[in-house]
View 1 (cartoon, helix red, strand yellow):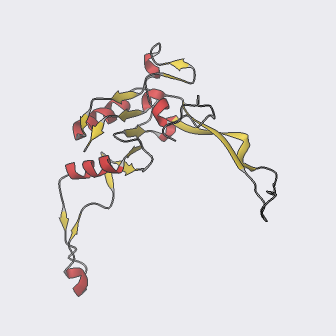
View 2: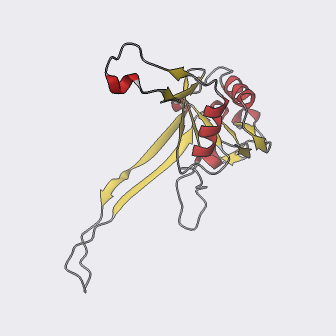
View 3: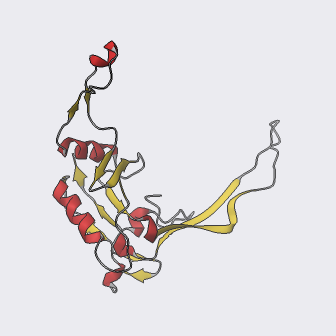
Length: 187
C-alpha cells in the first residue's frame, strides 16, 4: 500500500508514496496542475509538532476536500511524537483494590493530533508520516478480480490442491491536495 508505482514489471497497487506526491498520478501532472499536488514537507531532520501543524492546516484548506482523518507513520516517529507531548502521570482514585493502589500509569494508550488519530504501521517507509483523508482516498476493486479464486490444481508430487486468490485493485484520489506527507523525519 505504500511503495507500489503501478509501473513495475508485475504491477503493484499504486502506493501512497506515488499518490501522495507532486509528480504524475493518474496520468495527470502535478507540475502542470498545481491543484494536483499533495502537501509535502521533505526537509531532513527531527519531527516537530510545528511540521505536523503546518501539514494539517494546509491540507484542511480549500473547497472540495475534507479534513485530515488519520495520520499514519512509522513506530519510530509515533514514539517521537509521543515524546513531544507533555507527560501525564495518572493515579485512579476511584479504584480501591490493593494491587491497583500501587499501580502508576505513565504514557498514553492512544495518540491524536488536534483530534486526528495518530497510528503507526510497520509497512510505512522509514522517516515518513502520512496525513490522509478517507473522503478523498479510495480503493477501487476490479469487479472480476475481487478475491476470486482460480481453478484447483494438483501438483504431481504432492497430495494437495492449490488455488490462487486473485485481487486487482488500485488506490486513487479525487483530490490529491487533500493528502499530505512529511518525509526525511527522524526521532
